Image (cartoon, rainbow, N blue to C red; front, side, top):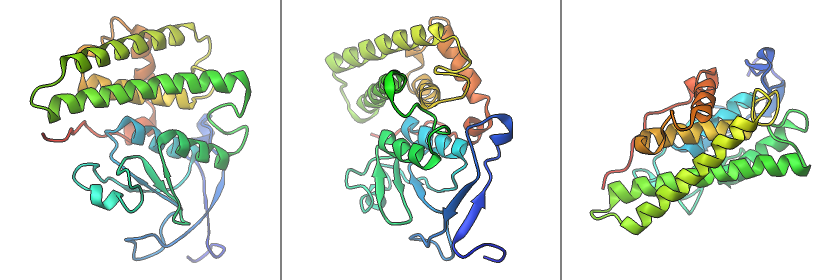
Length: 250
């Protein structure tokens, strides 16, 4: 690539000047499977209607990390995912070394390490980190139940009432806790002046839940969460990284 040091590309985060947690990053180029020329450092597998894939993609964008996107479906293209993740689950982030990172929490931990302390979207240690991770766990747990509930509806001829009722209760209780946490926050974002992982995942999960189960998320009942989601969705990375829900066919 003319004008660059061999194997080195420097990418400026376009959101840095607006106060986003980005910086100049040197990334190594590598030839990736399926590419005829030099590709980017890593590629993300999964569709953006998944709240788990979307949260990772938005973090990549906020950090200014270049990546390629493979929008493979866990149902329609599971065989293409399997060589990278035998669970055939998304998100999966494949590095230039061939190492495949699975599960959004693990992937984000890697991205935080790349970003470095002071730029990471979560505290590196201490009580603040634990509180942040707790909210992320509640939000991803809610997403798990929302996905499970969707599959129960579209893949089973006769959904289990016991399972549906349990998922409804879990989703409702977590929404209540998240509403209280957002109400109690005294900073622009849940844990400070900058957007963090908890802010991103809460917004991603709320969008998915609203689309998959509109009766379970009432903006009038959860006004702080609704306002939080609207604030996030208005930001460029959220507007750019989005996909209408496309559930599997039973």
